[in-house]
Every structure is written in C-alpha cells, then in structure tokens.
Length: 58
Image (tube, rainbow, N blue to C red; front, top):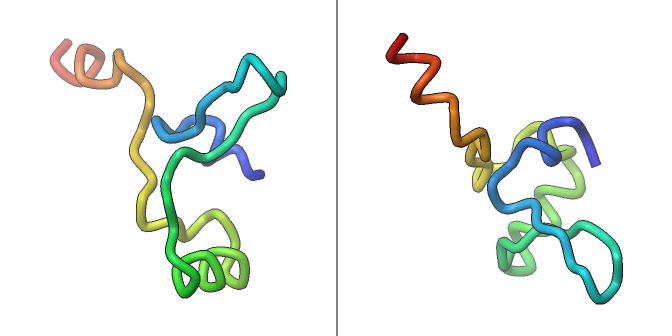
C-alpha cells in the first residue's frame, strides 16, 4: 500500500481481522491494471479527509 491508499475514503478498517482493506470492488481487468501500474494510478481514489473542503473555504 502506498500513502495514497491510507488517505483514500475507500480504505476501511475491519475490526474482526484487525486489518485495513480497500472497499472498492474491482473487476478482473481493473485489478490487473491496478497491480501492474501501482496504487498511484487508482481511478477510484477519493480523498477521505473530511476537513479538506473546510480548509479550502478558509
């Protein structure tokens, strides 16, 4: 995982397994492309920082 995954809104914590995972359901082609190109090119990345908009407004 890269630092980009850690700030993504789809990067969730599972209490049962005590681990983090990506909640996006990728199809086979998307998963292959993601693994080949690295996590820096994820097309489903969404900033999980809830305060980003507030900082932008100030």
